Image (cartoon, rainbow over all chains, first blue to last red; front, side, top):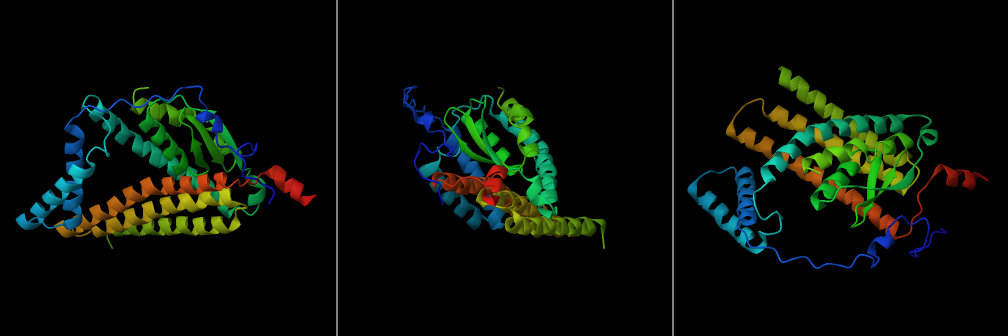
Length: 194
Length: 113
C-alpha cells in the first residue's frame, strides 16, 4: 500500500488548515445558570423510565423519580445547551416537520443504492469520489443535523466537518453527490431560522 | 388475517429485503469506503421498516402491555437512527486518518495497465 499517513498527503481530505491559527481561539463564555436544562433532562429520564418499566404503582414510580433526580443532578446540563425557552418549541416543531421529508428522502435514496447493489454491471455505474463544500450553516446543532442527514441518505457519507463548516463527503456515484448542499441544507437551515 | 397483519407482514418482508441488499452490497462493492454505504444505511432502513412492522403487528390487540412494547420498539428505532450515522462517520474517519486512499475509476484503470 503506497498511501502514507503524513498530514501533507494530497489524498487526505481532512481539512488540517481548519486548525490553523488564523482565527484566534476564543474560550467559551461561562454559561449562565438556568433550571431549564435540568427540568428537560428530568422529564426525558422520567418518560424513558415509565416507558421501559411499564409499572405504574407508587413504588416503581418513586424509584424512577429518585434515579432521574440523581442523573439530572450529575449530568443535567449536557443534554440541552439552550439556557432559555425562547424559540425552542418552534425549533422542535420545525424539526418534527422536517423528519417526514427526511424519511422520504432516505427511502428514495435507499432504492437508488438497492438498484446499484443488484445491478449486474455495478462496477461501471458507481463512481466513488470525495468532495468538499462549504456550508453556510452557523449553528452547531444545525451542522450536526445536516451531517447526520447526509450520512443517513444512502450514497453519501459525511467524512469530516471542520469547525468552520467545511464538509468532506464521500459519494458513491455522481447522482448521489449532485444534490449537495442544495435543498437539504435549505431545509435544515429553515429549522433554525438561518 | 386483518389488514393490519398484511401491512405488518409486508413491512417486515421489505425490511428483510433491505437487509439482503445490505449484505450483498458489502460483498460486491470495491473498497472500504464504498462498502460502508450499504453497511451503514441499508441496515438502518431495514431495521426501521422491519421494527415498524413488528410494532404494528403488536398493536393488533390494543392493551397497555402491547402499546408499551410498541413504544419500546420505537425507542430502539430512534436510537439506531441516531447512532448508526455516528458509527458510520467514526469508521470512515478512522479510515481517512489511517491514510487509506479511496477507490476511484481512475485508480482502477491504472491497476489494469
